[in-house]
Amino acid sequence: MKLLFENWRRFLSEKKWEDYDVPKNQWHNIPLEDIKKAAEEQGGEINIASELYDLIDVAYQKIGGHFDFQSPEDLPSDYTDWIAVNVDNDPQPDALRVSKEKEVGQKMSAAGHDGSRAAINAYVAKTAELLKSGGFYGEMSKGVAHVMITRHGVPFVGQHEDVEKVLGKTVKWVGTHPEGKYPGYDGWYIRKIGGEHQDMKIMLGRPNGIKVSGMPENEKDPEIENTIEEFSFNSAKGSQHRWGKGQPIIDYSRTEPSGAWTYTATTPGNPNDPNSWGEVVSKRGEELEAFLMRVEKTFRATAQGSLF
Image 1 (cartoon, rainbow, N blue to C red):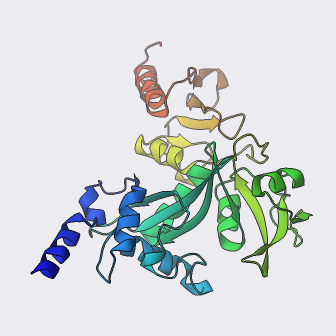
Image 2: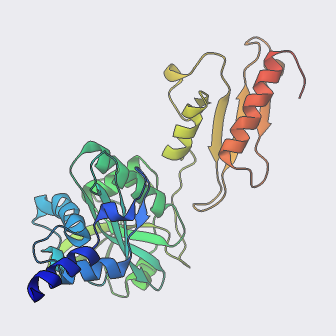
Image 3: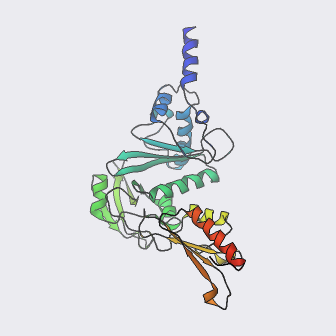
């Protein structure tokens, strides 16, 4: 009877992802204590520790698993921040991003997904978003570094001494990629991983108090692109073959990795008369949706022959 009671008590206290009642496609920070408790009392049952471990296991299975996580009982180790998201209709999490709290911010050191394209896309997009935010960084290599650099143009730490300052250890500096890849991203280095294995990496993101490089002039932000598309406007950074005829053209830029975006809308006029084309510029601190609503109102009024 006592054993039955203990099992029932444990069942009621252990958390699963569905217990958090998080809306679909919304990232959620999972309490560290919930993960610790679930890992300690795991015992083969499905709980938040096993759900998160399964995502890590899938993501790292091609390289033999994650060095720090060989079973659900290994969670959370010294990793301090665990965020996950559900992108489909089942009650389990589908993508995961894990980081450690360091002196210069959050070091992104683990991730997970269920192997589906939707989950991988969510994990990649969240990784890029965080790396462009102040206080997040990670040592990356191979495929992940390729995607972050070529598709998302994330910033990087480009000075040898700054990389060693952040890591608190020495590295063998390489600088530009030895195969000539990724022009402008000249922060590559080699260091030992796990005591023996050597790997070439680059530090991406924006650790606090460290100068970063990167941010190409034609930086493209997926969330901004999606919002522009929702308004049925044209993105100046998108393919002109996809432009809607006569719709405003939206461009955006910023002067530093974590800086505020500035938006510009060009409203089409007579193709033979450049003076008939209008321009709307975002106000200081104006959010994208508010700006696009103002553009929409301006565009409609102009189309009706009104002044703004």
